[in-house]
Image 1 (cartoon, rainbow, N blue to C red):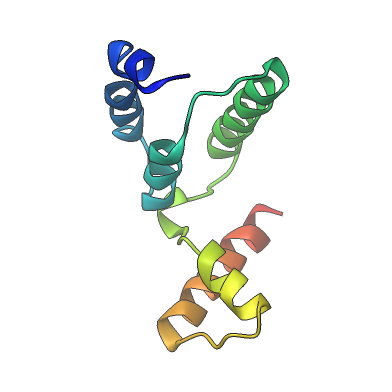
Image 2 (image 1 turned 135 degrees about the horizontal axis):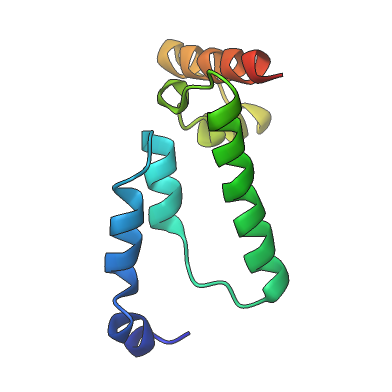
Length: 102
């Protein structure tokens, strides 16, 4: 989709309105990074992910507030880099959330 079409559809404004409902910083960042999907399969996957997160939130005491954006630090460590104390604690917090959900 071209830039003019996105502006006409006010896509950025739509994303901002959705991001306002995010329950965590990672959720907000995720929504703000979205771009239009081109395939039906991708759209179905995105809707399924959203449905799963809503069901998780409804069925458990899962707290999105406890999530930290740990993708970059984990990738950095996987590539042989070292993590600082705050990054390690963020990864630990994310792992605890995952363990609680299971």
